[in-house]
Image (tube, rainbow, N blue to C red; front, side):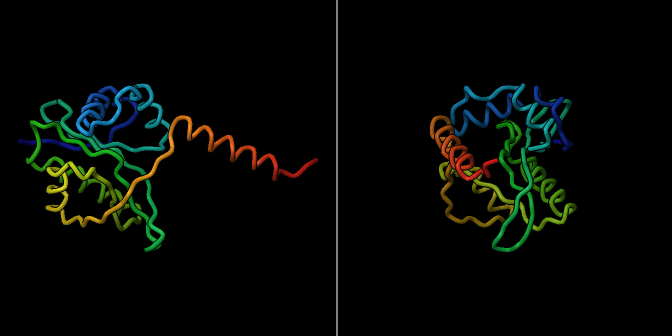
Length: 167
């Protein structure tokens, strides 16, 4: 199978969104938050970059990534947020090529690493990552969303107002 990888932007959100949804469903994450418009907006803002793998004019995989910094090593690199290859195209080098292109981009920008996470139950992906030479370390991910996020923001805003110089 032949395929190409290219940078994707906001105009590609319609091609990326179905694969993002497929990854979200595969990982058993909530799917109700994803929107093509939201993905296009984030890509247009430059907060996130994308690569798309294509074969025969069809999108068969993608990567979403952003700048990262590792303070332990005082080093910069890229953090892969999403990595997905359609089931019918797995084990054909697409995922490896996507990660390789992210690594190439990182090095071109002075980076020395690519970092990503996977769910422990995703044994197929973890085996593929081991074949790349990736090491695995146990990490717990933490996130604040919805009401907890809003409460934390309100608390920080109140503190910022309290500390603001009075005129």
